[in-house]
Image (tube, rainbow, N blue to C red):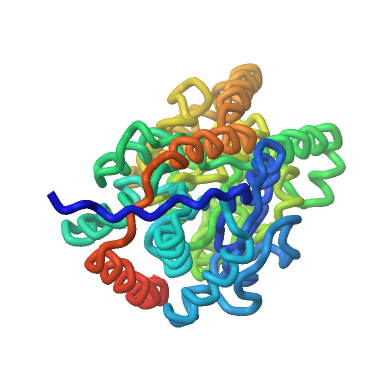
Length: 416
């Protein structure tokens, strides 16, 4: 038998390093919880984000930034590997928590870790239904996924998908997808305490469904407006309004649909709202709705549940299985059936204030198991699973495969 080469694991007392493209509000809450539990640092790939319009902020304490004004997908792979090596060698990590397996920067971090004997934890929100799956692509993905030593995923669908890719089930922790529950709970409570004045200031109606999403096709907001029109025809004056937070390329189309007879004046588009502003909109709403056709998880559902709202959530959302009890804290939606969505909205409206409050309490209890502190505990557990595993060097074929994926990921990002 030919002996297998083994990379000696670093005897490092350094921190566990969390890597993300940008440390936005969700990541900051999780990172702070990890720092309160174990020695940790962070590496932010870029100071810019082409998807989320979060306000620019300096990185949190202990977080360094790889690139200031460029997204990591814009940097040639060879140059990115050099920058990544310089950054990680300066930190001397005991382990790396890496976000995903397809973008350029995470793969550069994974290659460095394999070459230096540093344990790795894959952080993944992916589930089987969030993108088309081809046999070759899944085979490549499985090869890359199995390079990690442990994993931290969102919940049941995400764990099952990782197992399908060949990752050992005994080294998968849950709890990746968390928001700052206290931020939304406290902010919603403050909003309710001053509801009449705050509604006037924000221009909000007394009763409304809240949706918050990017205005892109996968969020299925056109179907939501169709369902909402059916709902209004059915309930008439008893119908609640619809408030849709966000922005994106479909805005003009959605505003035109909302101006149709029967809807004019009942659908509001306040625009994109920064993180500190969000709890007030949740706190004044009666229920939350997310009708996505495709969604890895759906962190807005966490936010709404932390604000003690009943939730109406597409069954295609990755969070639905773990967060939504149909009839307990909300209802599941068929995103391709506007008539069914309308019936669910009608059921929420007619449930009565006491029943809605009970569902809101159930939401709050359920999302309490998906907190930044739960994330930190799960990550620490995954790191402990990863530490004792023997480090194996990349064989030539796997290194070539990894670098081919790095090179092709730029085109994929541009197409998206």
